[in-house]
Picture 1 (tube, helix red, strand yellow):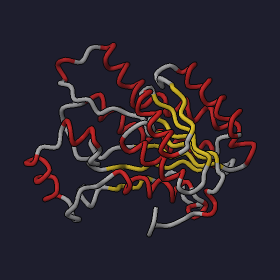
Picture 2 (cartoon, one colour; picture 1 turned 180 degrees about the vertical axis):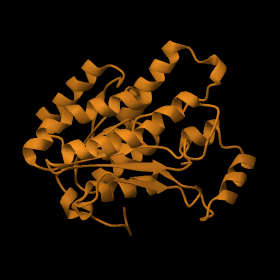
Picture 3 (cartoon, helix red, strand yellow; picture 1 turned 45 degrees about the horizontal axis):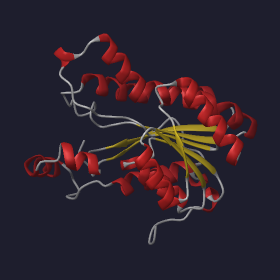
Picture 4 (cartoon, helix red, strand yellow; picture 1 turned 90 degrees about the horizontal axis):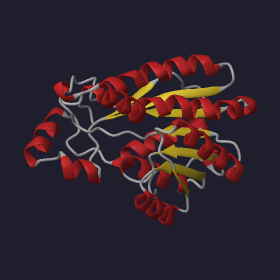
Length: 249
């Protein structure tokens, strides 16, 4: 975090990140740890989760977020270990490509469970303690994919577009209790997964031509926006979305 902002309000704050074992989520975990927050993260990737835990000192809890009972138990465990969650970062998602013709009802439902449903149930689980405290920050991770009319993954883009509605609705419902709810909307972020699966030289060149800023968006670029939304510096910011894409949309 050298050269970037420190937020005194984040020191010792209890932070929960979903999907923290790799990619953007791992960088978010590291960023909060660098602010001296008490960080826990959920993931079903044991190898990645243990690696991030060793690197950051954060608490890793194995959890398949599609299992709502397991999700609730994991959040209870965080509260027993660190105290009530004060910041929730709903990051977990998978942008697996799929053709419209291949989608069956079971796959559609699984994609909603992977990319959207857990966000609501995580928020539901942390809200009572946030209400008691009269404060809290919930940050939902969206995507520019649907904003740019990206094809080839209709269940993913449908779920990610719904994050906007979920964010604004929760912001209204929870705002009277001092709880803020915002959305961070990443552009194409060049995680290891993206580099391995989708980032051909030709595709990257075309993408950068569309951006105002001519460099790749990297996970720390997203994490720094998340930190600001979690900190008291953004105390009067809620029901908003913040696109971090180098000016590509």
